[in-house]
Length: 180
Image (cartoon, rainbow, N blue to C red; front, side, top):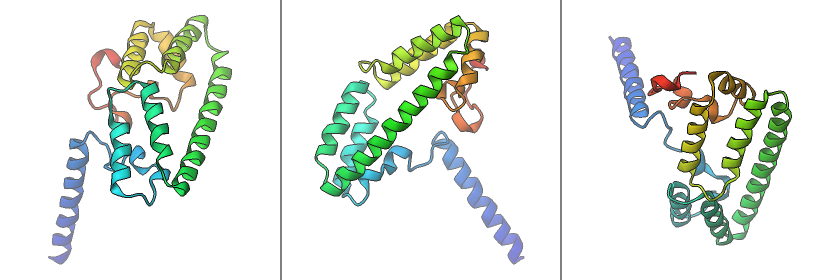
């Protein structure tokens, strides 16, 4: 009887946790931007200010970057160092990714290279919001022939370009036109 009750309790907890995660769209509560290493040891006021910047979907990428830089200037010395280290690491990884991508792009057909250049230009345009960038990339992708999309997808294995709306949860909500 104890084992049956314990098993039922475990199953109930797992079910509640799964339902709650699905209700949130599969997102874990402490998203990456909430775990930024430079927020370590800061009071809630600093954290709230940072989260407000990150969660502002109306700001352009330039405004977002400027706001984060301005926020970093207000940090205590130890956290400024953590921010500088984080930023350097982030920029280094971005350069590494761009270099690898540029090398792989040379193997693409002219049509796929053109699509890659257009997507890169949108990514580099700091006057767009993140939502505008995402929507415009989606439009470009949808307008491209399937063969070109597949070709580009082959060089972007970890890029959001490859994921349907559901991300790592198997494409929940994937629309019929976007099956890839």
